[in-house]
Length: 164
Image 1 (cartoon, rainbow, N blue to C red):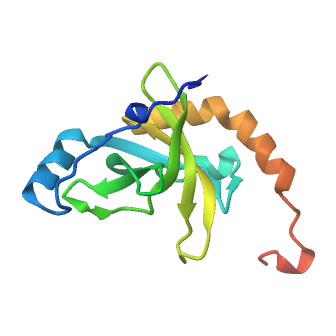
Image 2: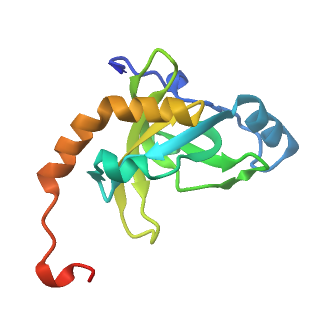
Image 3: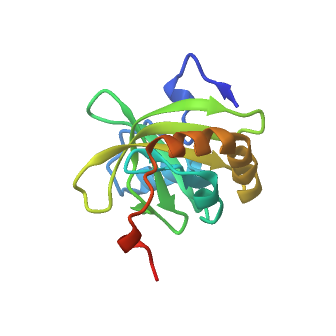
């Protein structure tokens, strides 16, 4: 993957800059027009990159990715259900930027994402691709780096914490 040095908000997948009222027909038509069907694989848990063996068993999330400007001078990318473009599949990636992009269009987005308990925002990176094989190919190319990042923080389990 090649690093994107001069990130432009228009590089974000499905950039949507409408001022239509949320949920209005004009808004839904705009979302339908600009949304991009992508498979997304989050690479981090609580801000820590996971190793490739943990990531390869996870199925990418499929949905419509729409990116937009936030009121806080940043951008966000969110995954919506294809059947209802107002329903989020997961929490949006906030303060998002395009980190790297491959020739096949697969990209790494990085930013911050709320955890499921809505307690903290953590650094997060998504691999976004047009199909699962594109995501898998990008993951394969990053596996050595991901494994090294994971090894830096992984602690061995305590003897009494292991499943028996």
